[in-house]
Length: 461
Ligand SMILES: *Cc1c(COP(=O)(O)O)cnc(C)c1O
Image 1: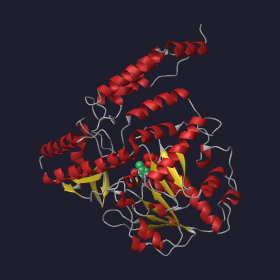
Image 2 (image 1 turned 90 degrees about the vertical axis):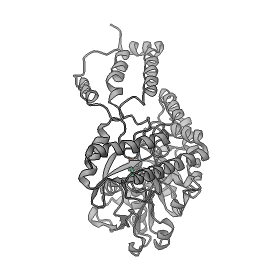
Image 3 (image 1 turned 180 degrees about the horizontal axis):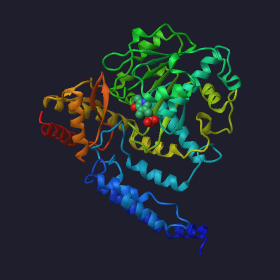
Image 4 (image 1 turned 135 degrees about the vertical axis):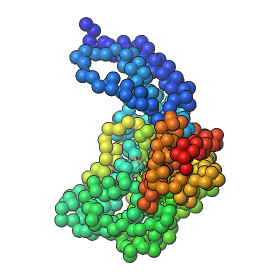
């Protein structure tokens, strides 16, 4: 019997599993437009094939890849195809995928410079580029995590510790029990992940002050109470339903030195567009920001970014040390995040930015906006109701009542030709279309409108 190590050595040498994998990947890419946007029932039922006991003996690599393609590929969401409008999910930039393949072969641990000089270098370069692209303060530092949920969590841990320090309380040393109360002010329209982060932080929901929003989900600036530098204020660049942005500059003028964190998961990137950057006016006045690569920027999953203007505070919060510490003269990525071992996210983030260039990011962002405006116009002409101002890439659609919207959405989702979700907006269940994939074209928008119209015909209303 060959040992398991010998099997691996020969698979590495022989390359047939890699060739097979590439062959299947190419097939998947080439057939994406024929594939059902949401998996067919039969494909989902076939997933039961994976319910098996772990075998005693090894399974051949080729068999594993084959099984994945045969039963896995048909059960995927066709997210790279251009007709997927669910959540706020982007597609993948081809060269970023290629870079990812190469990086995965490198198998780097991006914890520190010493564990991967290349991951460290590209993290530094990506940081400089992003700070420049978003026009944030020069001293802003960046950490790479799984997504905006984690990035927001890190930003708010840092804010909490910094604010408590001003009150003479050292969280790393003294913990939270018995700590002075701090004020946390948040918009009622904040994303669920922000409330979750606050709960994880030990800031009870009962002690958070929620500020009402206007009809677009923007925080009502005039309702923000008098603050000081021991408060935390959480704002939003891109409401997940409407795409709306808070009025950052005006709010900063009233914030009296409060720590401002901006959740800009998908919206922050509009700062790169000369046409749309008015939406992010004043973001540079904040203290920390969370944003995703895998949404608007279309990087591979998973790519969350925490940005913070106060390097010492971020490093102190993440490393539980009282003062700033540096492991090497070079960049050690783990200083800015909660984890130690991580994959080299910086490589595919760098490849995405390098490919797009400043103009490419702007073109991407403006394209999402143009298509969203187009969709809203065409749906309006066809007597659908658009419930939000199309400031960026989110379109809220209604045909009549909550009930009718749910039925209409059900038809659209089951069509296999597109997929999107719904949300509750101002008490009504409505359909939410997010245009976030580089692959979506004007023709796709026309097809989507036709699908809406024929779905309504089926409803008989
Ligand atoms: C998607 C989203 C999040 C959460 O981001 P993840 O990358 O899924 O963790 C937070 N805030 C907003 C506004 C979002 O759109």
